[in-house]
Length: 498
Image (cartoon, rainbow, N blue to C red; front, side):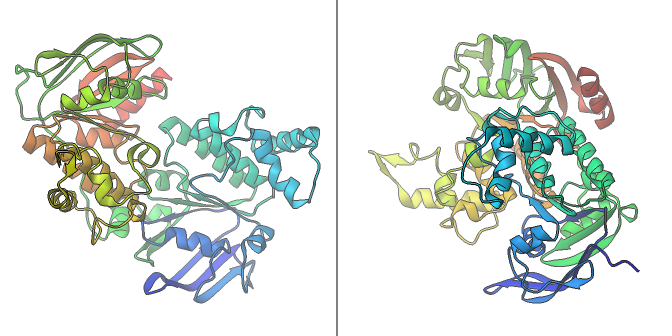
C-alpha cells in the first residue's frame, strides 16, 4: 500500500511555558486539497512551520512518503517537495515580476553575473507552468494583491513541489479574485500536487477542500472528509460554541433628519453623482466590484478627497469635508481596510494606539493628563473585550481580531456620530468576527451611531445591515432594504455588473 505524502504523528511543540501544539496527527494524501482550519492563535502557523522544517517538534514524528524525517530543515523540506506561500508572499516589491521569479534559481545555482535573457526565459517558463498572463516587467509593488499572489504561486511551482502550503491565501482578495484563485488551485491539483489550504473562512473551506482538519488551542478537535461538515459544524469545532447569524433591524423613523445626507457627490474619474442617506442607528452596507468607488466614497467622507463636488450634510447642516480634522470635528470616524499599514502604529503599545486620536482632548496646557488617559484606555479595552492583560503590551502581539478592536475602540473614545468601516473583519477569525459584529450592532442600536459598512463579504452585509447600496464604476446603482434581498441576489447582481 502506498504511504501518504505527508504524515504527522502525535506532534507536540512548546515555546517556554506555552504549549502551541499537543498530540497533533495529520495526514495529507497525494494530489489532495486539504484544509487546515482554526482561529487565530490555534496553532495553525506553528504546524505549518513544523511541516516546512522551520521549527523542530518537541515530540512526535514527521514522515514523507512513509520515511521518518529527522532534523527537518527548510532546505530539506524544499528538496522533498514542500513549498510554503505565506500571507505576506515574501516578494521583493522593488524588483520586477521576472526578477522575483528568477532570483531563487539564480542564487541556488550560484550565478554571479546577470543575464537578462536568462532571467526572462526563467520567468516565462514559470508563468507558462501556472497558465496565467503576467507583465514580467511590472514592479511587484505596483501589482494588486491577486497579482502578487500569482507571482508567489508561480515562483513556488518552479521547484516542482509535491505539496503547496497556502497560508490564509484569500485574506485580502475580492470574491471574483477568490474564484480565480480556486481555479488555479484546482489546476495545480490536476497535476498531482497536494495543497494544504490554511484558512478560517468556512465557505471557502467547504468549496475548495476535500478533507478538513480543525485545530483549537493546539489540539485537533475535528477531522474528516469535507462532506461530513457544514458551516455550523466547522464553527462549533473552531470556537467551541454555537454562533448564530443575527440580522439587524433598524428601529428609527424614515421621516426624521438624516445623520448623514450626501447629494450629487462627484470626484472626476472616481465618483459620479452619488447620493445617499444614513439615519441615526442605521447600518448601511456598501458593496461593489473592485474599482467601484467604495473606498473613494469612504475617503471623501473622511476628508481625504479635496475638491469634491456636491453637498454633504450632517444633521441637516451642510458641511465641507476638506480635511481629516474637519471630518473628525463633525463626528466622522474611519477604520481603514488595511489595519497594519493604515490603522495601527506597529511600534507602539496598545494604549498608545488606542489613545492616538484623543491626546489633544486629554491634554491641559499642552501636558497630557496621564492618569485620565490610562483610565480611558483601560476602560475601552474592557468595553471592546480586547484579550490582553495590560495595555502596555506591543500592539503587534495581538491577534487580528483584537488589533481590529483597538482601531475601532480608538474612534469610540471620541464619541463619533458616523463610523465608516472599510472591510471591518478582513483577516479576522470567526469567533472575533462575530464579536466585532455584535459590538457594531450594539453601538448602532444603543448609541444611535450611524455606520457605513464597506465589505466584499456578502454574508457580513446581509447579517449586519438594514440597507445595502451597490456602487459600480463610481455610480450608485441600487439601494435595497436587506429584508428585500439576499446573499444570492447580491452575488447575482454583482456578477451581472462584471
